[in-house]
Image 1 (tube, protein in one colour):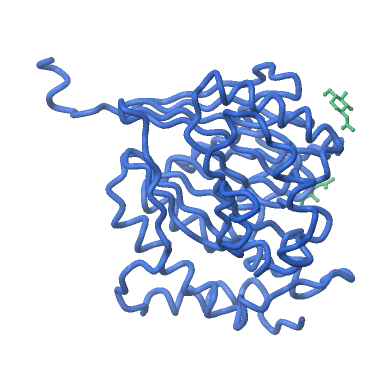
Image 2 (spheres, protein in one colour; image 1 turned 90 degrees about the horizontal axis):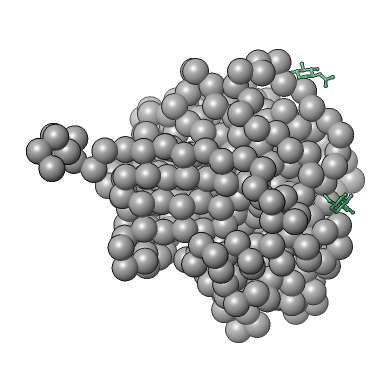
Length: 334
Ligand SMILES: *[C@@H]1O[C@H](CO)[C@@H](O)[C@H](O)[C@H]1NC(C)=O
Ligand SMILES: *[C@@H]1O[C@H](CO)[C@@H](O)[C@H](O)[C@H]1NC(C)=O
C-alpha cells in the first residue's frame, strides 16, 4: 500500500475536513448493555491474547474467571490483537475456538464480549473476524470496527485505531494488511472522527470510556502513537472522557498527566509479555507499569469508578479510583 500522506499533511487535511463537516447524526452502531439492578456495572479488560492458550493466556483466562465471578461482571472488553499472528483466515478458522471459545470458559466470562481489532487482526480476513456468523459458534462475540456500548451510567466508545497508523501504510514490513473496508483511508478516518466527536458530545452518560487498540501514551516498546495524539486525543479531551483504554503494548500501565484529565490505561497482557523495555521521561505521570501478563477490572457506580490491575496469579498489582458527585447541590441537604 502506498500513501502520499505523511502524518503532518494527514492531520491538516483531517482538521480542515472536520471543521467544515456538517452536523450529521451519529453513525456509530450502538449496542445496549444492561446494568445490574442498582444501576452499576463491572467488567474486565484484556488485550493481545489469542495464542492457543500459550504464553500464560490460559492462566490469565483462569484468573479472569475467578475475578469475574467475584465481581459478578456484566461483560468483557478486548482491546484487540484477538487472534495471533495474522488474524482469522476465514469464518471457519479453527483459531476462533482454539484461541477464544475454548480458552475463556469460566462461567463468569459467559457474558457479552466487546472487541476491537488490532493490527494483527488486520493481517487476516477482517470481514471474517467481524462476521456476526461467528456468534453461531460463540454467541459472546461482538466485534466491530468502531461502535458504542451504552450501559446507561457509562458509555464505551470503541475506536478502530489501526487505520490511523501511518507506518502500516508506508512500510508494511512484509505483512499483508486487509484494508478492504478502510479505503479510501482519509475519508474513513474523517468519518470515524466526526461520528465519534458527535457521539461523545451528545452522550448523556455520566462516565465516558474510549477503547482502542493502540496507546495514545505508552512507555513500552511501541511508545506513544503520534497519529492518535494529534487526531484523537483533542476530541477526547474536549468531551469529558474519563478513561482511554488500549492494548498493543503487552503490559499493564496507568499514565495520568497534569496536561490531560484523561487516565491512560494499557491492558495488553493477555498472553505474550516480558519485553523488557521501558522508556518514559516524566516519572510523576507514570502511576503504574508492569511488563508481564495480566488484565484489568473496572467497576462503575453512579458516583464512583475504580480500576484494578491483576497479574497471572490474580494478585492485585495496582488500584485507582475516583468519584463524581451525584447531584452537586442536593448533596448538602441529604
Ligand atoms: C508466566 O507467568 C510467570 C509469572 O509471572 C512468569 O514467570 C513466566 O515467565 C510466564 N511465562 C511466559 C511464557 O511468559
Ligand atoms: C525514548 O522515547 C523518546 C520519545 O519519547 C525517543 O525520542 C527516544 O528515542 C526513546 N529512546 C529509546 C532508547 O528508545
